[in-house]
Amino acid sequence: MNIAERLAEFTVKLVPERVPATVAERAKHLILDAVGCAFAARREEFAGRIAGSIARLAGPGARGVIGMGERLPLRDAALANGALLHGLDYDDTHTAGVLHLTVALFPAALGVAAHTGASGAALLAAYVAGVEAGARIAAVVKGGLHQVGFHPTGLVGAFAASLVAGQLLKLSHERLVGAQGIALSFASGNLQFLEDGSWTKRLHPGWAAACGITAAMLARDDIPAPREAYEGRFGLFRSHLPPTELAACDFSLATAGLGRVWELDNIAVKPFPACHLVHGCADAAIALHRQGFDLDRVRSIRALVPQGVVKAVCEPAAAKRRPNSDYDAKFSIPYAVASGLARGRLGLAEFLPAAYTDAKIEKLMDKVEYVVDPASTFPRHYTGEVEVTLDDGRTLRHREAVNRGNPDRPLSNAEVQAKFFENCALTLSEDAARRIRDQILDLERLRAADLETTLTT
Image (cartoon, rainbow, N blue to C red):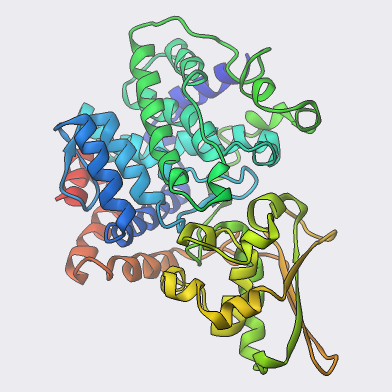
């Protein structure tokens, strides 16, 4: 069987009873984490503008938007929900695949499960199936899509979402293969937003969810589609990667260990609301801040980063030293390091305009140079090291060999819950947040529509 056939076979067979209890428990906490990010995001300018624009285009429908009150058609609600879940860049990352899966797959799972009257257990199993497929598809390219300007969350997320939606629609094996072939014509996601801090990245997960839903619906009606969605002559890998990146791919990773090794356990929960690629250096800078030193005596700063992150968070160097939006700041090694050194933190407040345009911070950013770290274990770990040289020649140094939240240094389920409550506190009462927490952690005993009602009213 080819890749699409193997992934379809796995998806068909992953009924709720086959999801290990520990995997299901962690899956619910990943969903909880993403939902908390959505409630924190709903107060932001982008949330209202994006949701309002989608609502004006789509008109009314039956499905809800998390924390916003709108009722939209199925695909449009998934698009809006993806933007809310991902908008703060505070959601989880599959480390080897370097992509955000929950924010693309949960909107598809929630919407289609509520649409079909499915159980919460079915929603959870479909979400897990999508994570397992999407993580493996992205892992094949070893970060190569980023190097040529594609965003795997939007691109790979569409294929994974087609399996999520297809399982909830109870598609046959053959129709699931077709859904992936149809998704090949829909999948997209571009990194040009890195040049100017624009908002398009926020749309990628929801667009992937909408693409997956559309692909599954068309496959249900037996619309003929390519069978080799991934390894074909014009499949995902060969059409999106140049020869050098394609040569580095390992197609066997797309199906390795299906049903035995759970890639969901390799998803990292973020401790900072910023691109995951800056986290190692942010924590290193915060550790140096805690040592205590005079910022006015800093002569130079070096940030040691993996080669694979340079294009996203280090270049162009001048622009990274002067972020002109919150999204610019979230993708800036100089800003993450400067904020960590000066303030000892990198939270939501540090992405307000007054924070990233602070003259003291700009002075520090001008001193930050990046160096490629030959000892990095990226993408397994998003390593970071910061060296500060003072005017008397002394050098202060701290290294984060394994970034906090990484599967090898994970945030516990209790820590995920604490993050959820911290995010929800920005726009919800504690009682409301507890009701949401309790429903998500008891998802197997609910109808999906009940959860949707709680999240969207």
